Image (cartoon, rainbow, N blue to C red):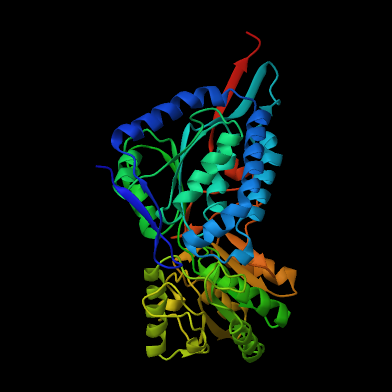
Length: 462
């Protein structure tokens, strides 16, 4: 009997989809097919590999009208936001634009009588273990450059977004991708660990929890597979005294509550200069109060349910702990009728009088709650921003570019923003420090992490 993976919709708790997990024999066939396909795929010119990926992108565009409500049923994002096609297009097209240059040989011409060059060689089989919160874009970050670089890809998607893997597989099928170059699989956690420990996978990219990352590192131990991890986040924002107040409020509210706060680079804590603090909090609370919590299939809904009830329970627990320790809650959750204990429907919350002894300011929330603290200067803000086990992004809100650069140099993070947040620029590397993980995606560095360098050293005269 095969294990059955069930996708429980956050909309109403119904089983939206279920799929049988692959057994060991089926997994062996997947890996064997991938290995066979990789040799011939690597021999395909880069331009042709890129063309296949762009054809798959066109197929995804054609599906989007069906995908948007499907995403709402799977993980709760309101349909009014239109899915993830914009980011998927931007990232794929940028990878396509730089692929040839990023993968080109690097010649060394400073030594007469020799031909010497470095070549980027595909790693082989790349396994992508994708999360549910941005199920297309997080997967695309690795899938597209991996394929363009000559690797084959095996995708194992989160149970919460099972159908996304099938959509991607269909897109590549429509594009005419050769058999075995991209395969979507359904596995249990135990089956995933067994495959990782087999030594048959050459590179793994995982986006998810810190605990999940540790389990994957453990499963891969001794295989020498390379690994990219994007794990937890507790991303801070610092609003300086010279910030454009209204602009900062508008963007930080969106950065905190878009996708019900279920974003690895969402804003989870805000530090505001004392001169702006009261007005900032007032504006932040007012804008937050305007969210409409409800069924994500309703065009009026601006805040959908969290993906699972247990995620909402964690936010409720964090909030209650903060209140017990003296925090102040500014949002009257009774005005959000859909907010009900034991369900994934959770009102947004803004907390002040918080400190770093509270879980809500230290541990990842991954939901619609944010804590705001007053600071007296850049030094104090920097101290708080770095007081975290995580380091994915940090944003500085200021009109002083030099100050942002100087503060940014001292922040322990993978990305520093000024006057924006919660965004991946495909021209820049996406990476983290501390418990946020290791490795890198996007930009030319993303291509380099999906290939290995190989040296060619030819003596021409002897």
